[in-house]
Length: 254
Ligand SMILES: [Mg+2]
Image (cartoon, rainbow, N blue to C red; front, side, top):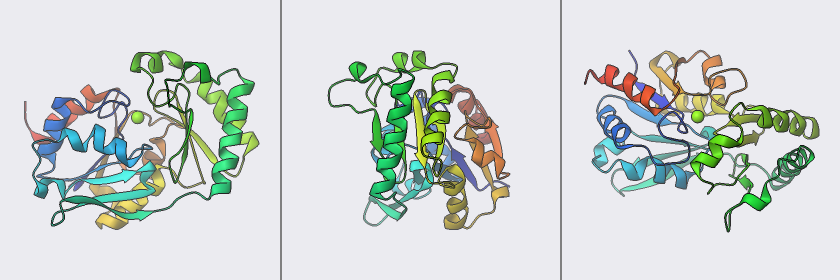
């Protein structure tokens, strides 16, 4: 019997980098009555709020107390304090400044070598490489780029695979993985979704058999693969429509 439903965000609960659609918001709210709901994503806390929490407009504080936010691949964990009516950080494992600098240099060098450093395409105030605390994320067109442009940038992953491989040569002590539509995430080894899922099991006091995980990048090298590899039952989806279909089945609603 599953106690926890855990989800990747981008392309699993939403169209990458956008708020979850109404249907997903309704289904997740219903799921909060029956399961602990645990999104795990490389994104920052504010994006979890914009993309998921702010969309759960019908959820009661009691329901929100069953939502667990595993931010930056689960290297940060937030939960809802029902008395204070606010989100509180339970733990955080940040990178050291010198680690951030080394990763940033490796990715920037790799992207420039291949001609994938698209600074001229950024929107005002946007950045390509972002320090997210416990990971550094390369987003080829920045955070604010249009979704269509992001999808068009690297549909076959070829550009990101080259950046991933070259950055790993330049900074071999770190792990680099492909995520989102234009992103490469870097972190200290072990700081991927396996780290997040391992802490999820500890924090919630559940076994991996009690967790069902949904993700779109479950192939080797994808950012959902570490969860699958550790033996958590995984549903691979192509989009939030697939996820909605599965959740309707789980809830027994049409
Ligand atoms: Mg994804």
